[in-house]
Amino acid sequence: MPNARSLLNRVARLEEARVPKRSRIARAFGSFDAFEEQVRQEVEAGALDRIDMLGETGDGGVLRCLRQWEEDGLI
Image 1: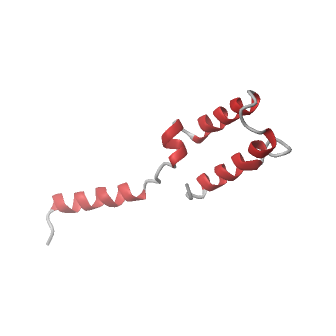
Image 2: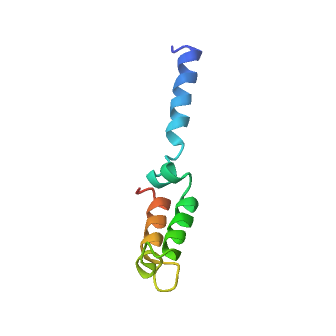
């Protein structure tokens, strides 16, 4: 029979495995919202194309795809 310490260690590992991993974007920028703010600033400065990054209505484009991928755990 396993002792209490080994059972506690196993439970700790199982609980740690449940915690969702942060995306690469969240690790690099602190959060996806911070990344989005940076992208929007770069769009306003003319460094990035508005339609490509934000879509025609301002809520689509590459940024929306990246957010969806992050929510789905794909990045």
